[in-house]
Amino acid sequence: MSHEVQGVVARHKGAPVSVETVVVPDPGPGEALVKVLACGVCHTDLHYREGAIGDDFPFLLGHEAAGVVEEVGAGVTEVVPGDFVILNWRAVCGRCRACRRGQPWYCFDTHNATQKMRLADGTELAPALGIGAFAEKTLVAAGQCTKVPEVRPEAAGLLGCGLMAGLGAALNTAPVTRGQSVAVIGCGGVGDAAIAGAHLAGAGRIIAVDLDDRKLELARTFGATHTVNSSGTDPVAAIRALTDGFGADVVIDAVGRPETYRQAFEARDLAGTVVLVGVPSPDMKVELPLLDVFGRGGALKSSWYGDCLPSRDFPMLIDLYRQGRLDLDSFVTETIPLDGVEKAFEKMHAGDVLRSVVVF
Image 1 (cartoon, rainbow, N blue to C red):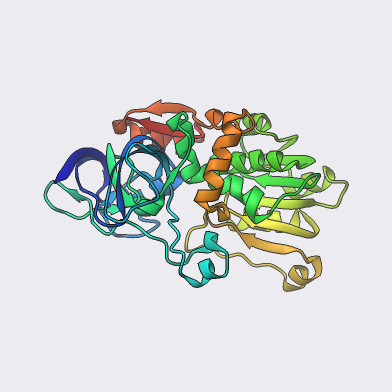
Image 2: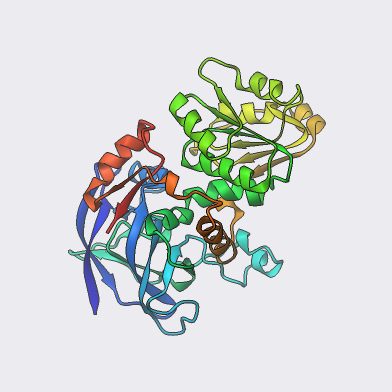
């Protein structure tokens, strides 16, 4: 038996998305059928629509989601029907060389559902990041479901991608330690999450850098102690001035452009760390003086999904949310219906929202 639901589909590169009937099969071995309660509108979904991630159209968009497990297939033991879950796009295999050496957050063979969701005419859909959660129900690998205590789904689902990327960049990849100085370049959802992560870690000075004063003001609510508007100020000089002339211990680039990466490289202290969490496009290149790479020491790191292990990190972060120590609610700018995704892309592009969240 299959399920007919409504979902947001990107049929062609650059074309507006549409709400269409999606046929979702019952779960097979190792799979789970999830009733989606809420799903955030992430830049990655826009990248899919624009063809920046692949050309396997049509795509079923959406991946920052929370919901309830409805059915599970044979052999599934991680979750049972009725479980409240956050969906993740890193279902670790437990067998690859990264998993075997005790670093499952780098898993090189993550799982997705085997069966395909389709349009009503039988056309196979490619689910965004193996999830496809701009739909009333979605089919995923059971390992993509992380059980957590039931909380507000609009907030919890954001840990499924963007917020986890930012929080993890600070907490896992850097990792920020108590008393360190931290600069974050780019104060959208991912950047503000990195600021929140640095605050949780006990950073002494947290410098937010952006072109938009609205975003900088909001960054203070997540823990930024200083702000720099780089539209009229050299951010490297400003970060150095705010760190006694030395540069920050950790600089997180949440934009992912050559110019911001170069700024991050130049704004770090000797033996400091640069973390790239903003996603560059395939054509971007950066050139750095090799002598400076050698002479400044430290580390240049990339953060994949915040180097998170969902089974470890999602419950811990939901615990902090329930304790009032991590304000996930403030990342939810607005809630929207399923047919509001295209307009949400426009607001996101204009910098008017941290997250629009589809609720079902």
